[in-house]
Image 1 (spheres, rainbow, N blue to C red):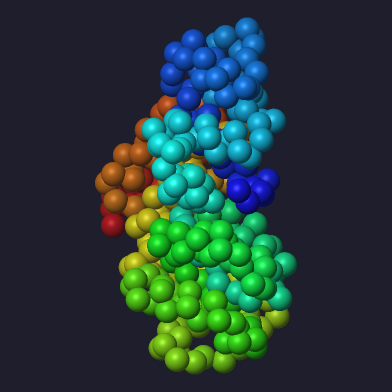
Image 2: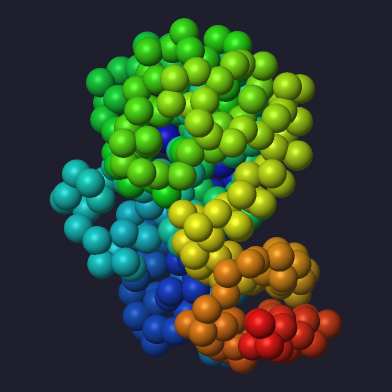
Amino acid sequence: MLSKTPSERINLIQEISKKLKNEDREIIDLTLRQFGLPTTDEWITPEFLGSYVMNMVDKASDEILSQLIHHINGEDLGDETSKSIDFWQPGQYKLFLSHVSAHKIEAAKLKEKLSDFHISTFVAHEDISPTKEWQDEIELALDSMDCLVALVTDDFHESYWTDQELGIGIGKGKLIIAVNCGGSPYGFLSKYQWLKSPDMDINKMSKDIFDILNKHSLSQKKFAEAIVNKFESSYSFQNAKENMSILEKINYLDSDLISRIKTAHDTNSQINGSFGVTYRVNQLINRVQRS
C-alpha cells in the first residue's frame, strides 16, 4: 500500500467522521475498538461526535484508515479490487497524472496542490521500471480515473509507459488535459487544447486544471459533486469559509447539488456557525435559481 500524504489522511479522516458521527455512541465506540482505536467517556454531547471521531482516528495508521473506510462503505476487503483501489480518496474527483519519472518531484507537488480542490491524484512512475504489482495499480487507476493529465516534458515521448497511458485514456473517451512543459504535440495529443507551463509553475498549473474541470462537459458534473462533498465535510469555521470560496466558483450546480448544499448548511454547525457563510450560501442559491 502506498503511503498517504498529509492531505490524503485529512480527507480520509474527515470522510470517516462524516459517516460515523450519525451512528449511536455505542456503535461508534464498538467500531473504533474493533479497529484497535481508542475511545473515551468524554465528548458525550451528540453535536460534537464528529470531532470525537476525528480525534480518536487521528493517530491511526494508513492501513487502519483504509480498512475503516472500506468497512463504513460496506466494501468487501476480500475482493482484490477493494484492496487496491484505496489510492483514490473517498468523494474526490479522480485524476491520473502521467509523467516521466525524472519529474516525479514536480508531479508530487502538483498532487498536493490539487488536493486543495478535492482532487485525488494518482501519480504514476515512482520507478523507471515499474514492478508487476505497480503495473497492476496503474491499470486499475487508468480503469477507474475520471480524467488524465499529461505533463508533456521534452522527454515525455521517450517513455514506453506514458504513451500507453495516453492511448488508454483516449480509447476510453476520458477527458485528456495536456500540459506543455517543454515538450511538443505529437500523435493524437496534437488534436487537444494544451495548457502552457514551460517553467512548471505548480500554482498556475493547478488553477488552470481547476478551470478546465470546472467548465468542460466531460468533467464539470463529477467535479461539482466532489466540491460539494468537500463543502459538506467542512470541519472548522475557517475550513467552511475556504470551501465556500471554492464552491462559489463552480459552474455546474443542479437541483440535487443545491439541495445538498442547503442540507449541509442546516446540519453542519461548522458551516452555519461560520461568520458570513450563511449569507454566501443564500447568495449562491439565489444566483443559481435565477440562471
